[in-house]
Amino acid sequence: MKKTTFAIIAAAFAASGAMAQDVVRMGSEGAYPPYNFINDATGELDGYERELGDEICRRAELNCEWVINDWDTIIPNLVSGNYDTIMAGMSITEARMEVIAFSQNYLLPEPSAFIGLADTDESARDTGVIAAQSNTIQAAFVADSDADLLEFPTPDETISALRNGEADAVLADKAFLAPYVADSNGELVFLGDDVILGGGIGIGLRQSDDALRDTLNAVIDEMKADGSLNAMIEKWFGPDHPKF
Image: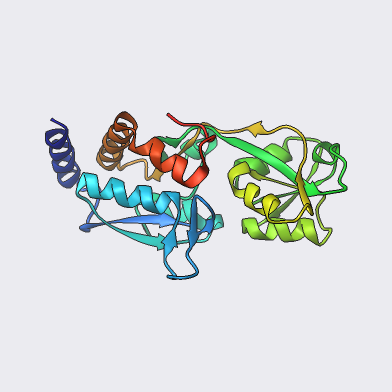
């Protein structure tokens, strides 16, 4: 039954004319572990979203290739047709849905966290200078607070700003920050409670690509039902990460 369903959806996708080419191009940033990153040993895109995207394409019998794009222009280049999907740790938000569409979420809403240097007072997260990657839900959260927002194009630059004294704290996904804290020998610490932002992580698509979205959603549904999505989440994010 599932194979038949996928065949029907794939046929509709092909007939829709939404894609002029045979390849579905998957856009990612390659700079946000464990979601997506460039593997130093292979020089190839790696991470949770690479593994998940490849599995989705395999199950849907889609011919997919990966395209790396800077975060700041990742939505405009989707809309302009430089690739067909975004899998880059992108949270589903109402503001983004005014410009692009999303699949259902493949990660539940997850914690964001503040980190600072070990001697940083927790109050810095409310009134200090907070570094965040530009065009993220974390940057929007800081902009709406009493703290001062310092934006950077890449997440690694926010960590550098904290270490060199430009920022009092960093706000980002906790899963991204946790390895920095663990490997810092006590230099970096979490500040206060986690913050839950956004509606989970989904695949970004052009608003006109309804058939492709249906195809992707069908596979994500199957992976939620058979437990393979939860297994992948645990592999990359650990046993305590929210699961479906």
